[in-house]
Length: 330
Image (cartoon, rainbow, N blue to C red; front, side):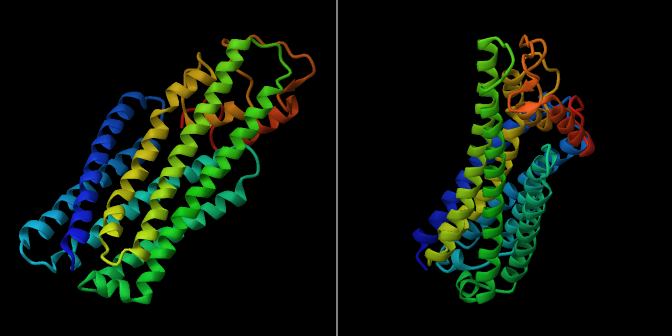
C-alpha cells in the first residue's frame, strides 16, 4: 500500500471537506438571517442538512486521526476499512437525499404538467438512497478497501448509487434551465409597453437564476462523475475516498447557495416584491407579469410574452393546486 497515494489523497480530501464545511457554516448563518418568509418545513430541512454536515465533518476528522495518528507506522492502515468510513457514507447519502428532495419539490412546483419528470427524478433519488444504504452495509462486511473493490456487489452498489445521483442532477439542472430559458425568450417578445431598463433588469434576473441553477447542478454532477471515475481507475482508492468525503458538502452548499441567492434574484425579477420563495421566482420568471410597481404595463394585444391572459390564469391555478399561491411563502 503506497501511503502517499492513499493517505495523502484522503488527507487532502479531508482538508477540502473542512474548508467546504466552513462555507456551509457561513451560508447557514446567512440563511438564518434572511429566511423569515420561509415555511417551517424548509427551515427544518436546512437545520437537518447543517446537523448532518456537522456530524459528517466530525467523522471526517476522526477518520483521518485514527488512520494517520492512532495507527501511525502501520503502512496498511490507509487501506483498512474503519467504522468511520461507512459512517461517512451514511451521513453523506442522507444529506444528498435531502438536497435531492428539495430540488424535486422545486421541479414539481413549476406550473404545467411536470408529473413525469418529477416521478423520474424521484425514482433516481430513491435509487441513490437505496444503493447508498446497500453500499454502507457492504463496506461494513469487508476489512480492507482492496477486498471491497474486488467484490462485484460493491461495483454495482457504488456505480449504481453514484450513477443515479449523477443522472438526477443532470435532469434537474437541464429541466430548470430549459424551462427558464424558454421563459426568457418569451420575455424578449413581451407585448407590453415596458420600461427598457426595468425589462432589462427582469431578463438579467432570469439570467442570474439560470446561472445559479446550472452552476450548482453542474458542480454536483461533476463531483458524482469524478467519484465514479476515481473508483474505477484509482487502484489505491485514495482519490475515491477523498472525493467521496467532499461530495456531500458540495450538495449542501448547492442547496444553501440556491436559497441565499433568492433575494438578489428576486430584486432583479421584481424589486418591490416582499417575498423570495423558490416558487415565486420560477413562477414570476415564466408566467407572471413584471412587478406592478417596477414596470409600467399597458397591454396592446392581450398577450404577456408568449402567453395569453387565460394561459396566465391557468398557470396560476396550477400553481395553487400544487400547494403554493403566487404570494404565499414556502
